[in-house]
Structures are given as structure tokens and as C-alpha cells.
Length: 319
Image 1: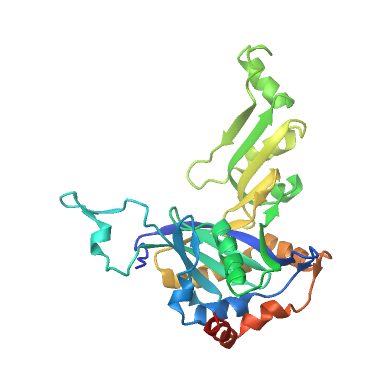
Image 2: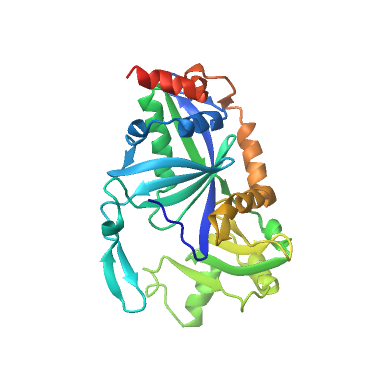
């Protein structure tokens, strides 16, 4: 049993590149795994699909739209209760389930050629579980010499990138004792070097009033805070006044991501597709991944064999 939250749902949609690594010679390959995943999901074999677990909970992958999948985990070890808000009476959720039913907590995987977007809520499975899930599928069908590898897409912006943004919101600047800003803050309270010797860093949080543009003030910090001793400079900004806020890291790399909001699971596909289309950094990073010389673009017969659901049926009939 899977129940979608009927209220507003907000999730962070993180992006990962993927590739195939061959164990025997450590070669790396780029190939589109969408046909294989589609064939796996088409396969009508519940016994086989119940084999996949992570931390003693079952994992399932179910299609809900073009390239969009529910990635579900059971939570049989969690205590989950149903509360009636009118009188605060409690009931065990497990009492509502049939013998062959379990509660499922879902992440969303938007799986594309050479990269995927991954969004999850609190109790839903994370991207690490998804990578292990794919590798367990490989193992079960005898693709033993190859591994599915995924890496979060990271990005670091330049100061000029940020200064050219028309809108800047909440910002965080982290400075250590090598930075003169740290020293100014210490001197402001007449502190001694000894007194502040156990302090690792200061976080300077610049918060706007509701939805206000604080580019002018933040720009002062960007220009004036020295690079030496600057541990992190993180900002929320817009590429245009009417666009969506994006996270930018001037010092330290952050994962490229979007924030998605919806009240209706049926709208998720279009919302994610729109976010991806508008994310210029993502597009640049995926192109860089696809043109990286370390990857070989070669058809791997042990893998592409399972692009056809008939191959799954044939293999499993002989097991």
C-alpha cells in the first residue's frame, strides 16, 4: 500500500550523473540505461521483484510517467500510528493492512540518459539505496563484471557569477581565524586570541525581510570579505527577478539541485521536467560528463541484452 501525501509536498531534487564501470579492467562506459530499467519494470514477476532489500526492508521501482519512477521502501520496523484529530484517538496503521500489504514510502527518480534526478521525503529511500538496488539487479541477472556508478553533480560559482544575479536572498558566510572578518568580530568584543583559540569559525547569516532582494548588502560582503580564511559562502539567488531561487556556492561546492513543490503526484512529471529545462548549470554539467574522455561509448552486450523484457523472462525461467 502506498499513499501519497494529499497536502503540499516540498522536496529537494538532487541530480546525479551515472556510468557503468567494468571490474575486470576498470574501464568506464557511458550508456543509456532507460531501456533496461523500463524492461525491468514491465516484467511481471512479483517473486523476483520481492528479492531486493536494503537495511532489511523491501525496495520496489514502479513507473508513474515517462522516465519518472516511484522508488519505494517498506518500513516494517517503524512504529507508525493513525491519529484522529477530532478526539486524538490512536490506532495502529498495521491493523488497516491486509496480510500481503505493507506501507510504502516513496522517493521519485527522474531517469534520463547519463543522469537522473532524485527526490525523497523523510522516511523514503535515498539515492545510495537506489544505486545499490540497480547493482543488485545486475547481480541477480548475472551482470557480474559491471557496476552502476552514480555521482552527485557539484558546482561552485565565481563571485562575478553571483554579482551578476539580479536577485539575492538568504546568504551564509563562514570565516575562520585566518580571515580578517573573524579578527574584526573578535576585536569588536575586545576578545583575546587565547579566549577565541577554541572557536573554529563564525557563521554570518544574512536574512532578508519576507521575499526582499538584499543584493546590495550581500554584494558588499562578497566584495569585501577576503578569500583567505573563507570557508564557505552560500547564497540563494535568482537568475531573473521572476525565476526560481537557486543555491550558489562561491567557496565550497554544493550539489546541483532544484526544489519542487506540488499538491498532486500527477503534476510531478511536468514540474520536474520544467525545472530541468530551466537549470542551465545542470545542462552544462551533463554535457561535460558526456564529453569526458575517461568514458568509453560502447554497447555492452551483457547489459543491453536486458533491454528486452523477453530476455528477463527467458533468464528467470531457467533459474
